[in-house]
Every structure is written in C-alpha cells, then in structure tokens.
Amino acid sequence: MNFPLDHSPHAQRRQRLLASLEEDAAVVLPAAHLVTHHADVHHRFRQDSDFFYLCGLDEANAVAVLRGQGSGGAQDPRFVLFVEPRDPMAEVWNGRRWGVEGAMEHFGAEAAHPIGELAEHLDGYLHGARRIGFRVGRHPHVEPLVLRVWAQQLERSQRQGGHTASLFDVSAAIHAMRLRKEPGELERMREAARISCGAHEQARQVAQAGMGEYQIEALLEGHFRNAGARQPAYPSIVAGGDNACILHYTSNQDPLRDGELLLIDAGCSLVDYYNADITRTFPVNGRFSGEQRALYELVLTAQRQAIAAVQPGSSSARVHNAAVAVLVDGLLELGLLQGDRDAIITNHDYRHLYPHRTGHWLGLDVHDVGASRLGDHHTALEPGMVLTVEPGLYISNRLPIPEGQPEIPHHWQGIGIRIEDDVAVTATGHEVLTAAALKELQEMER
Image 1: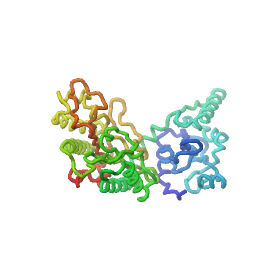
Image 2: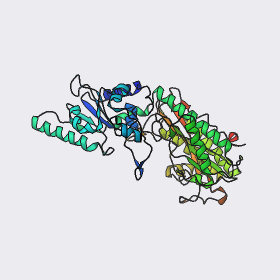
Image 3: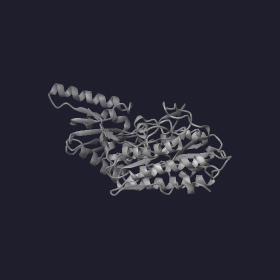
Image 4: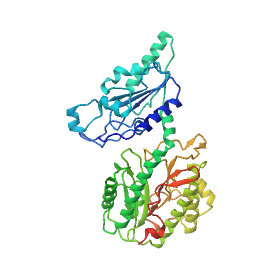
C-alpha cells in the first residue's frame, strides 16, 4: 500500500460533478471488486476508473456517496466512503487496508463506515435526494441495495405526498469530464508515453531473427516496471510476420524470422492508471523488402495526414477520413485496390485491408470513455482531449475480398503494418505525446 498521491484533484472533480447536477442530486459510486482468475486466485486488482477519478482510493469493494447541496441537511456530509475495515488477519493474507480512519484522514471523506454497514446507512444518506445517480447493470453487489432504497423512497413519497425520487445514469456526466484532460492528467500521460517510448526503442534495438516474440514481450514489460510503471496498459501485442494481420494477437509464442516485419503494440499504465498506447513496425533483419517498404511509406504518410487533422474544432471522423483517403489512393497505385476511388471509400471496399478505425480516446482507460458523436453530429475536438492515431494495413487472405476488387498476389500476403501515436489536442493544434518512439523509414532500418 503506497501513501496516496495528492488528492486535491479528486476533491475538485467531485465538486465539479455535483455542480453539473441538480443541487438535490446524490450519487452512489461503487469501486471495483476482485475478479477470480481460477479457483481461489484473483487477478491483480484494477480499480474502476470512474471511482478512482473521483475518489483516488485504490481498494476493492468500496462505495462512495456524493451529495449535492440540496440533498439532506446543511450539515450532512457531502462525501462519504464505505470501505473494508482494518483487519490484521485479512491484511496479513492480502495486504494493508486504509480502513475507516484512513478514508477520512487521507482521502478527504467527511464520513466513513465499514462496507458491511452500507445497507444500514444508505437510505439515510440518500434521504432528501430528488435524483439518485447510479449506473445500473454494472455493479451487481451494490445495485440491489440502491434499488431497494429507491423503492422505499418511492413508497414513502406515495404515502406522504412528498417528492418522487428518480434514478439516473451518472456516467455520462463523469465521462464528459474525463474526456477533457486536466493539465495534471496530461503530465501523467506524458510520463506514461516517455516510459513506453523507451521500451519500444529498446525492443527495436535488440530484436533479431531467432528470438521469440515472448522475449520481446518480457523486455517491454520489464522496462515498464523498471521505469516505475504499474503494469502494461493492455496485453502486449508482439506479432512477427503474418501474425501482425491479427489485430489483437497476444499469444506471442512464435519465433522472429529473417525477412519478416515485427509489429509491437504496447504501452504502460502508471500507478494512477494513466496509459500510453504505441504501435511500431520494423523489419526483423533491419532492412525492408520492396513490398514492405512501399506499404510502410504509405501507412506513415496516412498517419502524418491524420495527425495533421488533429486540431480544435476537428473530429475523430475527420482524422479517420484523412487516413483512409491516403491509404486508398496508395492501394490503388499499388494495384491492391481497383476502381473508382470515391466509390471504394463510400462502400468501404478497402476494409479487407484496413478493417478498423484510425483511433480512440485515451486516458485512465486505454479505450477511454467519452462520446465520439452525439446523434448525427461528431464530437468536436477540444484542447485537453487525447486520442490515438493508428492507421494500418493488413495484407492477408483472412477476410473476403469485396466484389470487384483484385485477388491479393502471394508476394504481398503476410505483411501487417500499424503505426500508432498518442496525440493531445492543444489550443493551437496538437502535441504528439509519443514522438520519442522513432518511426521514420530510415530510422526503422539498421
């Protein structure tokens, strides 16, 4: 158990969240539970991102209750934590706990109780709330208690003629906040990027034919831990040759072969869960073949155009469309597509070679929260938003070829290339957080 980080940002976020809601709203926010790996062994604990964002407590089985100014009495606590109590025997087996006293002393709770008393106290803390914020369907251990309290309040209001409390999904308000990173969050993401870039550079320098993909995976993840990260942000993808045409390849068991490319998609997660997400592709033997070079240059050009589209007022759709336009033009020139350019783009007849979007939001989650569109309108990029930009090409016979498109010659097959950077929107343009991981064609050769 590490001493907690500065928790003033968490307090400020709680205040901002409550200010965005009606004054008589209350929020019930559960932490994550341990997840069984097998038998009586659990996966390493990973906190619920919304809970960590607002509370900073990195323990399982906790519940936070946040109360607006119009909820309850004027002197009632606005931030309440229910936590696992201190227990010497449990802590000997599974690690230290902050307990009720630590919840108040270190995490700013105005009141705290053992988690076993949640059913006893929840009704009282939600009394007077006209709206109860809770995400139904995500927290089966807590949901029955919330619904029971809500039902009791509905029954009381019908008998006594008072207000009728409503239940609403608070996650939309939280996720709108998380989409726009604070300066301190951006600094943490720069640190995650710095560590991850160093791992990619080290991997590229040592990779050679005959090594196992798993050896590169071990090197990457050892670098993360040695540099102070908590763990990989996601299962590392170390894909040699045709394995790179499997987008989420994670078995990492095959040998690296002379003449093939190695695609590495890996990033670290910091102790406070901020992530990096980087992909680089390079030749195992240090030299691109003609086909590999042509496709690499095409993907790199597409990524440059897509990154250039990351500007305030733009959108993730424009970023994607910029990459697609370059890729389709290049594939037509190489003879891997044929026909009318605009029709190919409109009909998505390139998707057997490029089946995914060009990026996603990044933050506390690798595929971070936040709407990319609202109805027919794409979310406009704003300073503080962070997204990945990751065009790629995967030349294989795995997916059916659209009608009217050419068969793929054998000498093109088995080449998978993706180039991915983490890009923050700034007031005047963008910042590539992962620029320290080299990617120019000549830098990939040796």
